[in-house]
Length: 383
Image (tube, helix red, strand yellow):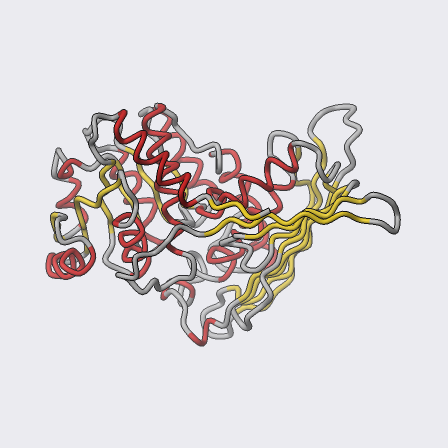
């Protein structure tokens, strides 16, 4: 099956914008880096959305970024200058794309902002450890604010479809998940990957995507992770995790459940490029996220007819169309539109989390990452 979701996304966006009186959903972007550039370019090409503010560490950086990527946006020098603006130049939501070690402080800062119904979307990882993540969500609940960790993979139509297939029992009970994600950081990587083991390394950078696949397969509402074993390679000079192989066991939560326990075997690395395929295996079939699994466009569903006979069904979802005005730094970044639209809809509905990536899933993911990094002996980590 070939399903194009870009047209549907645009129609839904334009239709709901009309319901809001024709006013676009407005964003303030925090950072003048590559991720911020990709997000801003994706938003510029998404009907019903607009970037109205850019905040960077220096005023000149903000001005330069705005002139290049969002000419109509107001530039703010220093993050505190944007926080001090009571109107945020009309922004409905904040997008935080700064270095990971600044995420928690900035999110807390905007949670304290006086503007009503202000939403915060923060790039992953939301914080370097689960305690800080739990603190952010607790603060958001106390203020009735929407805070979203930027697990954009969950907003891709292919991921939404996979979740539907699993929930519908199309592959039976999940019993195993395996996947890999690796890219050669020597050829280019975010600066935060190296240097500080407490906030850097490949687990927080891309391992989070592999753990997301395990949690997609074993929902936190139904399963608990009871065992996690990890081995890996640390950087000789900085001690960050560079390659990790991890195995996990998930057990059904419900007492007396007839569903079997399951396992996950996951690998991530910054030392080589990998296939980046993820497979979810069940008692009646399997789902394969074809490459690249963290920005998925194609799923293959294999149904087991008999021991020797299978049926295959492929689902393909085109990425939103690009206008060619921006050369994206990260592959597939035009699809940040999916996440932005999900945030907009959540704001309109008065939600405090996205159903695509709930607070409980985010917390479970960070808890697992903490256990993995602690087992590897990464400095400054906690389970």
